[in-house]
Length: 322
Image (tube, rainbow, N blue to C red; front, side, top):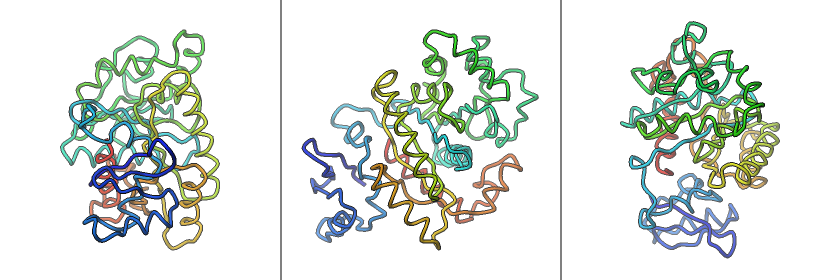
């Protein structure tokens, strides 16, 4: 499927495969996408991820000399300072899904709660080295990475909370993670960074090291506020430490399609913040909640569940954007 990019003169989206100008108005947008003569998939769902995204400008076409996935590592920070929006689950499951698709994936647990580390079956308190040691300069990332059957991981532990205090007195503190990943990221197709529920120095390190940001959010009223605050922080990072940082899009998690609230929040996030929503929304499921206790993702725990299938489709759509 072709990609889109904003035209320089306004808010129109240009579909690069056909040259069709797609309106930024969602209602007009759907109508224009339904043009049968184009020979394209015609649903709003199929085209929604093209709207407002920065990525179309950077990765719109291989003819402009930007490498496709496989020739250059993509670093993605998965961030939202609001807790309980399934950031860790999203990182773990997308990583597993991309591994199933033949990609080499590295996960980075940048949360002192170490939930991602635990979800892979590791015991954070039993690890001799974690990413905390990397931040303190006591180890290199290559010494800390855990090579697993699926995606690899740079693990975390509660000690990482002390790294924030250490970094506050360090010159160039925003670039520590970027320098650490330079030694290891070329071994992978994609690096996924699981950020903690804050906008502190660890999250700023993730945004500085990243090429893209992926924003999971729960389709509830307060999520709108959290997304807005994160986008303000992303703008600050672009001004001071990473001017090329692009917002890849948002992922609606724990979505209940039966409620009007969930549908309304999706529309509000797009209209208020211009955030592209990458399909599909991830349905709420107890199977997803059960999986970390087994040390696996929902792809292994309940591989035929609706949530597992949704995450696989999300990974495919995400890969298409890179």
